[in-house]
Amino acid sequence: MAVLPIRIMGDPVLHSPASAVEEITDEIRALVADMFETMDAAPGVGLAAPQVGVPLRIYTYTYADDENGEPWRGVVINPELWMRPLEPGAPDPDEESEGCLSFPGERFPLRRSEEVLVTGTDLDGAPVSIQVDGWRARIMQHEFDHLDGILYVDRLDDGDWKTVQKIARKRGWGRPGSSWMPGVDDIDA
Image (cartoon, rainbow, N blue to C red):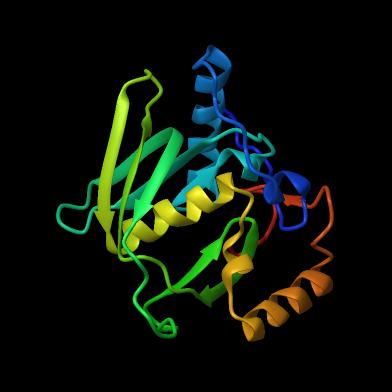
């Protein structure tokens, strides 16, 4: 297993729809193992294959279980997402802020659906069906967006979007080839 560089906003692989995985091969299994290693090193609660430069419909996720402290962890290949309609209104900056490993060190409020259903397959090709709410639903929506070439900052209101653009210019992001290495680069993801 290896920790992979994480692409930063502006890299074309982050802004294009990913392709379906046609067959689960040893290369796909190795990629997923590397994605888990990278997600853990970052540290993050999710990581999509495009974030490590691979334009395939795969994402990993992890989150500490609130009830018994055990991790909720897995991979979804070729996911489909269904969600409840969004509640109207502005997002709560304290309760609905999120960040992204591809726009590291920043958090912005974003309204997401409170409940989702994700289906797909696991590394053995077995069907996966995940129905979650709350923060777990946010993770599923965030990672699914990556597979469609959407970063969470693309969904922000105009004021926050302008702030994102200023940050990206200041840090030299927003162009192809920008990346950071978890465990090496000093980025507060």
